[in-house]
Length: 477
Image (tube, rainbow, N blue to C red; front, top):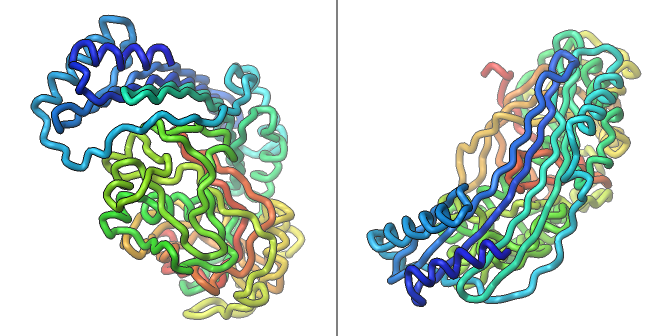
């Protein structure tokens, strides 16, 4: 925190008392152990300190950053920004600085922050051994971040966060099964359980059959649901897109099924207690039992709609807008008013009868990741179990129509049993529609946090049973 304060004072000395200043000093440490062909092939670690400076002076705003933090480097950064701000365009939408306000204490695990290669290697070994001879690949990572913020309005705060994650695949018969987890503590990752899950999924995904395109009821596992949350965050609950009329979100309207409750909560994921503008953060309900409550804002997007910041400024907010970066779909575990689980019909070319080639139900038990997902599958008369979504691309941002592919396992479900592996499918679906009133059959009882790039974003969700999902073709078209 002292270094951030020094930068603010340096700007005042060189630029005058009229300059409005924000300084953020962050130290990020990321360590990654990668494995392929069932052996560790790379261990890398990086540590970087960055100073980010933003100055508003004479109605103009400029931001810049530097990784040189000695006195000469800091002075050079300040001088460059002061020189640039005099030639910057006018910034009439400047929202001002965050006022002084207390923030909560950080919660982080020191053992995870200090973990070394041997700690991660032990988890890799457990994952590989648990697959009982299958070919494996993946990574185990640990990360730590320390951030201090100060501005010329008197706000001065600091916080820390740590994370551990593991993501691995097992291969059997040319197909992959995957398992992943993310936790605040490295000690909470059960690598052997992840390895067993990946291996079971791989063995259950062999000899897949083709199914025709159409609308199918689905059970989406948490990894697939995480893609829904990420896109809803970027394109729906984004305050900049909302202010510009590009978001589907309509606060005060029941846009989702009553089973859907979405909360952005940095403290649930041991996140930082403030944002890049120094605004305190906290749990923010975005959707409450189907009713859209709000979108998230930084100071600029909030000013555009006459509101206040929700504490969601981050490095990309000035370009793409503020997003909820700790989004959780609340586990409910109860069938909703949309009807008995699995009653939605299969339409538009969905297969009827047992899939060609049959397949013993018992041998496919490994397709189901956990007991929570198994419960949702057991109440589905007919549909598809989907492990993961990927290569998702937005076709229509306003209605959030997205196309993408399944991966890492799709299975046909008949009378509550997994009966056959299915080849990957392409889909085209509106995410808000898929979660809309009457569309959510059931929400699982246990959430799982999904690994993401180490940029602070986290997605946490249970499995979901949805009445309909629009599959538009095979993976190749």
